[in-house]
Length: 576
Image 1 (cartoon, rainbow, N blue to C red):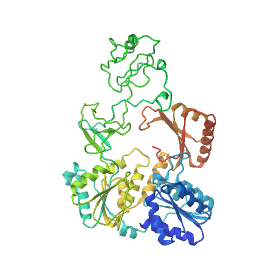
Image 2 (cartoon, rainbow, N blue to C red):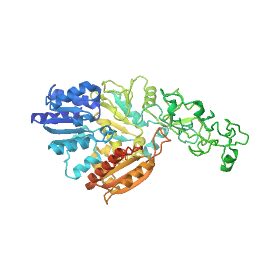
Image 3 (tube, one colour):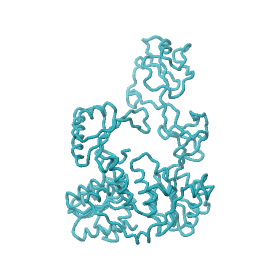
Image 4 (cartoon, one colour):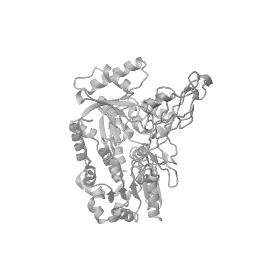
């Protein structure tokens, strides 16, 4: 790849000058590309690669070689940012917008921030490279800390792909079948012509088969209507002695409802209490262990609504999204994993589905039927292909898993642009452009690229002009007006409501601090867990003071052995 060769040239120049070099890339596929480039530029033995696939023993041996000064260059993934390179003269981070550069464990460091601090402390040069540009990199340029290096317009015209958007009303008017088809005529034609000379790439935003379903009649998103799985009691865990029967509550097996009556209490349910509360369950002629649901609807009652023994409560529903694993599989819940064979829509009562989002495997299945004589290859989370041959083939890949084709792809189609642009995320447009440009960079010079999105959208315009710089500057301006990172420093406090409020009260915040929230947050797969998140916003100049105060407050809670955990994160990637 040209970018790997360019990084290798920079590392070779640092080694010739007697300085060390450190290169951090998102994943092992990129490490292999840089490794191949460096092998041809500086030779083996002058550098080491450090990835998680090596195993702890080999990784430690290579770490010791760096520590002893036997090698002066390191190429690796996120963990390699801490490699003890002697006489460091160059640090390189490739594709700093990739979320793999952000550590998901406390204290949540980012590769760009780590390498920036090391470059500042050691006086080394720092190279932030990528096909796209993040708002954080644009801020470094705007502040004067960094200087941008851009290709000439002549080079862009020579090597950039020819981008054609396919999502405008005029296109749909000319192509009546495009309204119902997922692949419009312009994309179909690009794939057909590209297959005559080599492989073609189809980027699909979502993995799986049909990851999101809806009711066929009313279009309501399909949700799991089964009761939430109960949390196991201590006596249910393996290796725990059973609790004597006289201490256990008597339970009903009807839909998981618990009557919680003890032998010392009356053997009849409290019918009067239920009637005074106006419960939907008709308990007039109920006997112990029998509950008539009557007109009660699932989800009307919430956990904890019944505080007295004998009161029947509808269990909390799972509420997870339903999906399909294959064309002949039954729908299942993506949260609890149970089969939803008897599902019916709670709005209209329908029992048939339609696809909200089509995954990579279903796309590969459809393209295989459309091009029966062409092999179809998939690359995603289950199996990531590193390279493909130059022979004609349909390569269906999710963002970030696109294999490198020998000589480049002859054409490419970026499907379902709305799925990327419509995400409720602060970085949705920036991340969409980054994924599109990374896929477009795998094409041959002047190859045809079809993106299924409206051409008037800023990310599509930036892709057509191949101008990520202007898009990043515009993104930085918008965030400055709205008061979001990287224009300001922002910390998030997430945890149980009482714990979050207690920590906020204990803080001695700077006067300029603005607090947003706390507001409830959803925990996928754990609907019964109640958490809140508060956001603290301060100007960039006093971000260090906020971080020190949060560190002190977290230390106090840890020393007091507070039972509830509050997660503190500075400038998180998934802020919104």
